[in-house]
Image (tube, rainbow, N blue to C red):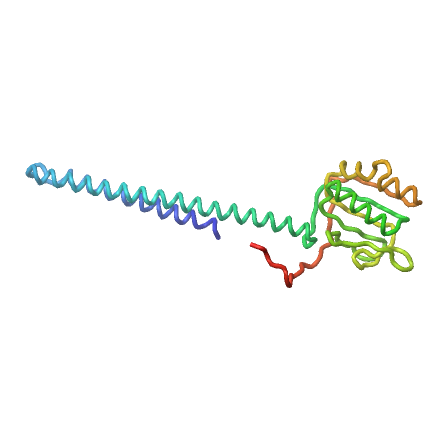
Length: 230
């Protein structure tokens, strides 16, 4: 909708400029071709010249005003479009962080088996510290769970874990978007996640990928009490 306005305004301005120029040329030609002009008195010639100069001055002022309006329209539309683009970008980023939008990008696919909920929590925290931006966890049963700032993991009765209240059983598959090499190095440091899981009898496999997809999403929450401070 916005992109059409500057085109319409610009076209109108060009038409008006052309009309003004045409009027000025017609006036000059009319005066040149006037049969009585050659015999006109000196004071009449001075008056005609003065009228032409005054009209030219008015036309120049109107042209300048139209050009200024065109610049303001173009600048205003460009500014609004830039603001809308930035707002959409921020909305997308917040949607990814809140878990309400699916995401894709380079990252890791991590398979962990034979572990308790604490090992999953340690892995998630290590990934966050290494720049993991968007994550989900899936198990042998149940749908994937989007991991957000408020996510929690506890051991479930009878085995498996609860991820944000949803039961999952191993092996657990963590999908995380971020810089693959950095995240893998963080998990493999001496005494880190991989070493801890292996020493506890579990197993971890890491696979770097140029593209992973986090498809699990959460419903957007409506705040009841919080409002912006400004």
